[in-house]
Length: 365
Image 1: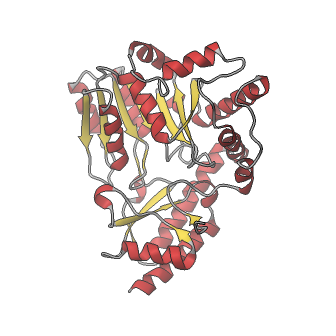
Image 2 (image 1 turned 120 degrees about the horizontal axis):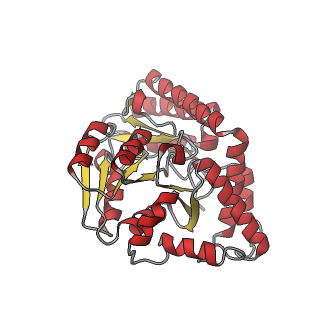
């Protein structure tokens, strides 16, 4: 048996006992009138969280499955996409996009710094792009990119805007329709407060002309296929595959918690907890990797003691039972990350993390 650890990582997050309990319930069929009513209610809840009147699709899979669906359904075979990137998951967007089209252009910004709107604007003026794809919260560093402003830029140039909101949905303010986001992708295991296993894709109404024009080679992650089955089998089996029924039932409980709290109250709670954490980290002598003004409210990155990041994280894990995350790519071994989303965005959880880090720093000196 794996040791039970308190998950203070950027995902999967700790979930409430009532969410976990649903995973142990007897299975139900993924079709029929009762399931269909239940499933469509869940899609309605997701629309409230995305703040969209568009279509929402739930894929058995990860957030990357949703990104694959979004990019493959709009870009193949010759779509031209611009990907401004400032970290590992921006690079992941590029990797997925290149599997569908050779017309992938990137603007590289320093890791740990925000995407510059002026540079994106100049690039859009010089090129005839079909879409821009960008990460909202760059999970590898906790930088929060200016998605609302990027959406406005895309609208002014008449191109689609695709957003990776895997680490930001239900944590950060995000208004899909009001801001002009065309496709927004997330996953179940972070801000949505439920176990991993579901990718979520919200699709705005104006995107379907582009999707219907594209000739995606796939079936399982093809948004046209999901739309077709939603319409063709919508009264008894509103998806083309066997759904992960207990994951979806657990997702509903997680979303009930979110909507009961209220989105505005939820965003404010995450902001306050982030301030508490960042202040506490400074007080114990640690240096934050990302400036306050561009920091996300669900992931915080910290510069570790020289050459002792792994040692510090090992102490916190073994002695205090708390799992923190290292980082990825160029930052591996240099910074560590603390996840504080959903139930983990609490004063109690942050106090425990700060106490563990304070003792860990003393122990490794």
